[in-house]
Amino acid sequence: MNEDQKKKYNILGALVRSFLLIAITAIITYFVTVNITINQYLNKANSAYMTAKMSLVKTKLENTYIKDINEEDMIEGAIKGYVSGVGDKYTQYLTKEDMESLMESTTGNYVGIGVYMVTSSEVNGVVIVGVMEDSPAEKAGIQVGDIVTKVDDVSYIGKKSEDVSNAIKGQEGTNVKVTVMRDSEEQEMNITRSSIKVKTVGSQMLDNNIGYIKVASFDIGTASEFKDHYNKLKEQNPKALIIDLRSNGGGVVGEALSIADTMVEKGRTLLITTDKDGKEKIDKASENPIINIPVIVLVNESTASASEILASTLRDNCRYTIIGTKTYGKGVIQSIFTFKDGTGIKVTTNEYFSPNHNTINDVGIEPDIKVELDKEWKGYTSVPFENDNQLQRAIEELNK
Image 1 (cartoon, helix red, strand yellow):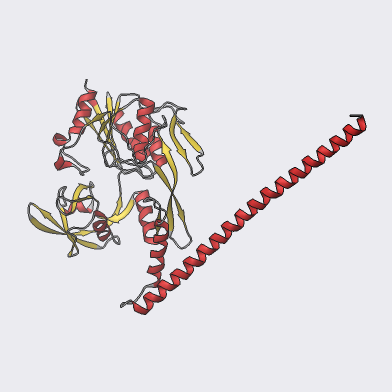
Image 2 (cartoon, one colour):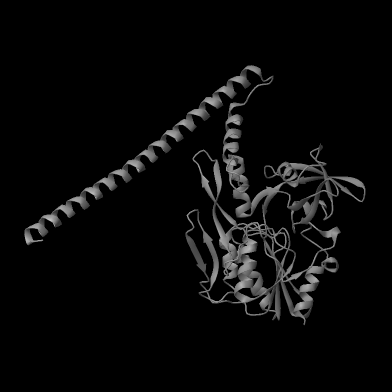
């Protein structure tokens, strides 16, 4: 092949390659465009179907339902149902009232009487398991173990703690009549509602210089409370510390990480989170630890979310012993999005893992030492010392 033939051959090859490249690009563009068009068509078809179906249902209800229909309630219910269709129990549409309640619980401020309650199948109702110090409930004589039977003369036997809580809450300065069953006798108490600032942290010094800190939930300011309580205990020279996370359902993740920062070496991983695309984010300890004594963490089946984050990072990083029962297993994080009308949506946006990349969601944390509370005390947030075998086991371990 002479030089002229080689040049013609090279030019022809380049033209063929260019043609193939153009053709392949055109084919890819075609299929991408077709795919987008199909998806757009399907989205429009789904929206049209939903609109038509809702109109059909609305007309049928208006023509046949025997009572009046509240259009606003219907719309709210429809949106709630639509969001629940994702199949995630933590992703929820929040009404204006739901949003206000959520903000109350996050900030630790609400108007009520100052009690902790749980739903009990044993009594078919709601039991008082904690009374806040200097609260309206304490002043009125409400006691741990009281069974709530009525609120403002309306029976709440067989109801849930959320129902009783909502009935008791109201405007500051107004009265609520709470009827409780105590020693087989009903007692009525008229209590004036007031603004309650929930104290999420409590502490005391136990025998043999063992410090004890109870964290009830992770609200805004909990980490600061924790540090204040530890500094007061530190003045008494504790030789060890028990951190009680039992029945702590979680809350603000940042507060849990700030508490972990007081014990985990600077620079070590505190938490690993992934988003819907699998992208990882790693939170690391940013401060030098201030707690350098032996620590034991107490957990139970109601220890969840941010509490599991704290327990797992303390075990992975500090090798602290965990005592109690297997935790709840809520290893996902929700983000709150608010709308202009005061409503909002809570969406599961991340899954989290322990520093050692252990899965928490739907798995929970197995304690290093499993100890069950006696059956009669399960579900209580406050258990007498002599009956609290989980706490006693922690003390026993620290005294070895």
